[in-house]
Length: 458
Ligand code: NAP
Image 1 (cartoon, rainbow, N blue to C red):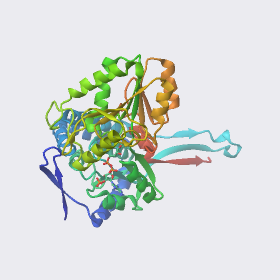
Image 2 (image 1 turned 135 degrees about the vertical axis):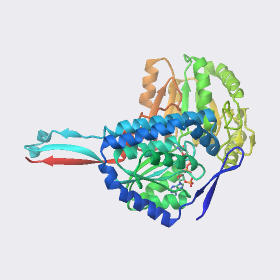
Image 3 (image 1 turned 90 degrees about the vertical axis):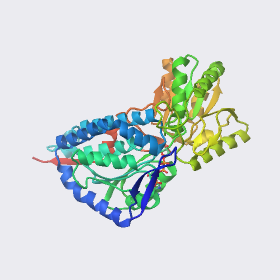
Image 4 (image 1 turned 180 degrees about the vertical axis):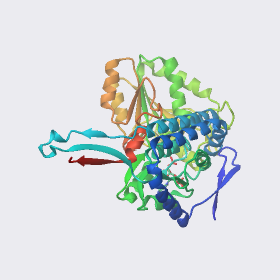
């Protein structure tokens, strides 16, 4: 069987080998998940919850080992990798709790004359086999956001993690097995999206595709999936507005982390920063000082802030976007240099709306600073995007906060924070090219269940 070598993204050292699935392996995995589904879906909610809780406990006990695996295979700074491990524990705990809350409602049948004399209620039932396809940038928590709710709802799962970061997923599957998950309820397939992913998406025994990744791949999956439920968690070129009444002592460090954590490879990473002209110079000076203080280097170092990008090709692509912006009149205020997959945290100004660094998803450690005079213009600029995942607005003016909430066409508006804020039980997802449907445990459970209506004529 062919194997895939997984490398440390900083040193290039091979840190693991995993078997690559072929067509028969996909066939067997879907068959096993299908076979395991009836018994798992009938397993009482408290038992499903207990297994998921146990998995959370086991993950917590191994949090440092997991953080190291994430830091090495994804190139994520250790402190952020540890935060991801901790968030995943919480995502599983929320999932265990949600397993006990999968329920419906009664329907007042006599609201219609035709319904008189009948009793009605609806329940939520699991859809069957969920195909979970996940990206490289949160190799544990974005897997947890699919596996946890799917298991909570009584579905079985076939998981295909990103080919660059499969080791954390292997570890998670071991943990769930140790926690008591029956055979077949969670199957893992490693292999290229274009083959293994596509075979899964087009398999008629799969009832639901839950995908997190890039918009172009997501669009292809929606077309290929046919009559299946789909959830699409896609990209964004996230923006944040900073009003003059903002406490820059709080906002600036938060903006710097939001732009450069995980080398900007976060779907809600701060890419466009609109700062009121009256504070622009002060903000920029502080922002550049905080950026210069970031420790860039080997992600496993405990004080590392920014590690490499996922591979050199991506870093070259991002650097080319920066060069293109500079050729169009942008200025590099910090960073811009590259060595292999390491791209320095880069700050740009004098950008225009049609530059790739502004209008497309950079997914790199780069941020554009844009001054504005009028709040409405800033909101309009931020909303002038084909994406709509999350946005941030720093203001202490209640009217402006509510104006932003009303004006912005996106899945989440963060007041007095940046686009990057997320906790794992809140509804999360995007509009337009940012996706379809929502995650956040309760919301993912809704997406992974059917509503079944029952009408009784006594
Ligand atoms: P990607 O290239 O789209 O890959 C995501 C997953 O899809 C991988 O497992 C990939 O497999 C698989 N895949 C690729 N082609 C496929 C196909 N034809 N059929 C089925 N599966 C296929 O994305 P990425 O580079 O890993 O992640 C970055 C993107 O994810 C960014 O756009 C980011 O914004 C987005 N993202 C969104 C969210 C959110 O919640 N909205 C969160 C995180 C990331 P291989 O690895 O084998 O190619």
